[in-house]
Length: 169
Image (cartoon, rainbow, N blue to C red):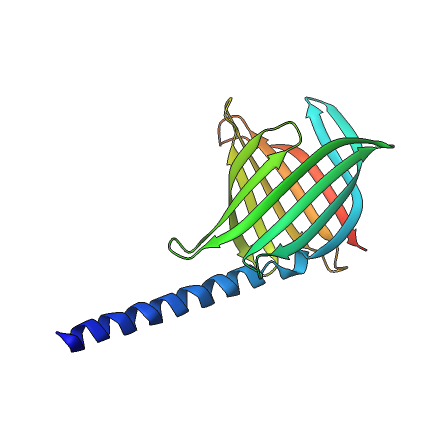
């Protein structure tokens, strides 16, 4: 009985160490985002309506690298028109990223985040009133953060909603 208990304890410790290593590796895949970014964004505000924005993103690790905080701010001239904060973590049990974001309006969103390739990710969420949003981001050959967003009312047809190009400062 003692040998079985010892064996189970050893397996549990090994599983825990392996899970933590997986989470660390997953979070390190987002390291390319860390820093201060600035650039332009073109956002759709309705059918045929677009607005040019100055976009700022601040990205940093917290909690000893277990959480990535992303704060985005968009400006039209001197006026801030958008402010959001997102927290990204990696769930060791499900082996999936988890993302929660908050808007300055008080709205909160639970989003998915998936790796699509090296330094390429997609994130998105369902809109409570109906429809869904998805965004793809990556680094281009110049080291710029490129992100595009799309809206779908039904998951079949997608419409552009955001185009962003940022340089690391």
